[in-house]
Image 1 (cartoon, rainbow, N blue to C red):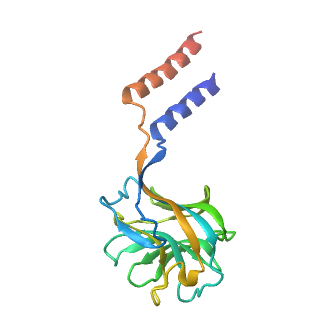
Image 2: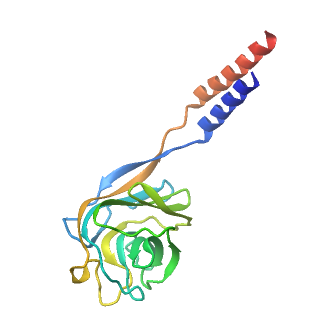
Image 3: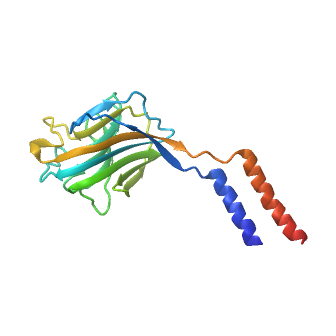
Length: 220
């Protein structure tokens, strides 16, 4: 009896508090370019959460990178105001695929999250996703969470970039000297939407049902 009431109470609490986030996806047109950027018609809403997902097929990865000067950025989110920090999935020889937040004009890293163990890009088809929800940035690679960090975002991103370089010397791009060869299979942004909570009436009925069963068992 007690276990039943406890289970029902837990279910009721979960029903009133849990909200699973799903993503409403929208394709970003890249026009087949290996590097570029697009300003979105509508900025992403940080209060609802958002995600940037790219699927690429890699045929060659960089053999060498000057990590002191530049590092390739697979995908980035930011704003048309370049003084605002960017959220970037970077790739280096030493750190592999990592999550950075950077000041747009200075290139200085404000937050660097390096997965452990280090994960490096390989040839083949891969999906990279950068998501922000409930004050947390999350980097997912081929369906596995590589890095996650608490972060306070102060703006709504409206600029999507891909195939860029993050160190800014000599306008180095991700496919400099033909070292990095890939095709973009898809690039899309998603706005978070919480699954609707049960209606108040349904919750009240559920609570009454739990109480009624408990009372009936007690009288019996």
